[in-house]
Length: 504
Image 1 (tube, rainbow, N blue to C red):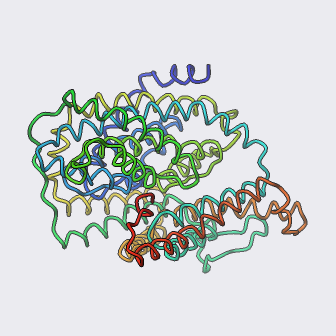
Image 2: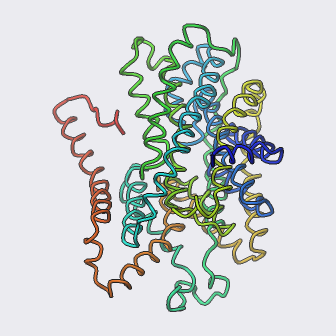
Image 3: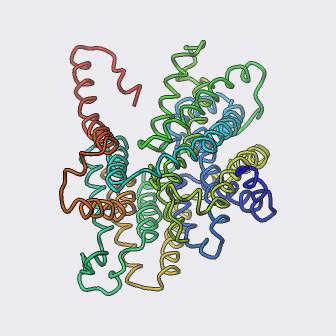
């Protein structure tokens, strides 16, 4: 019944237009090299202040969906993934394009995104209310442990170095502490600046790290020279033999993407590579792998798209973002004074179910809009990249000024952008910093609330079974990279093939 009401709202002309705009803009953004969904949402966040909350979130969801497919276009034709989830697609997609099969590869990507999107959105519609009901019994210690788990999962499993991930996380936590202490009213890390008394706006942090930092890094990276695009020629549609080979990878990838997206590990990196390796092991055409196996495009692209609906489960039901893009969507909720969590389905049912219904509609629009426009998107790849990054830089700075009207906060955003540039240069993951800045104050609130109830007794964190289980999982994820590294080292020592990399 709730979903039916959501469809009734989502089919209004206004929200249909918002969904179409989101998918189209998202695809355009995804096609442009170096711009992923997180950067797109960061740039457009200030422009949605005049929208109603439901309309803004529908646009954001459409942008996310569209940019995932747009990233597949750059992966297949340029061998340049726009974001981490498209890396696996490039492994087989680019060889297909070089062999004159760019059309089937792109069609496989968009049709796989549609199939997986429907599967995962059904999962979201049925699973999210159940998780929300369970979460109503959460106490302060449970929320603290859950946020700790989200921090460690994203920090440990995203990026190549646990130490770099931790440094990024603590930098974000430090940003989140700036301002007045919510209990005592004392100033923290304001250095006497009145503009910092209310803290650093998370939108400024996001624009600084993603828009300004990415633009600076992109301009620096252009010194190596742009990569030539593979010409798009030949047929677009799949033939009968190709259709028989891709429908099972679509379903398997959709299930993998949703399941792993719903976990605290979040994101699309893990399920896309798991899907790639699974399809390679199940393939009846082993000789094609590395030379353009179509299953290697179908599975990862399905997993990539399905992971978004999976990420929405902990975001909507627990208020926990498990990826950088989800963190930006959480900040959009906060702009409208809406706090995702167990009560969201009771307090704002129209918003939640209209958003879920719009995900179904967005998947249909993804196919209807993008398949006829494939050749147009390919031409957009010819836009000079240096001009593109300069435009991003200008819009990022204007966006900050439009929010704050303060030159000081513009300078803060530029400083964060410079820090973001060096984070990319030295391979520090950005996602933990964003999560730290957003979730840090929330985790502090739950920590102090739990200690206040227990009168300062830290044993309260070991009295509830759920809290203990979550903390143990977090501890396991913290030591997992070290254990895997030792296993890999031993296998290399005895000359065995390294299967660990095939899993992660």
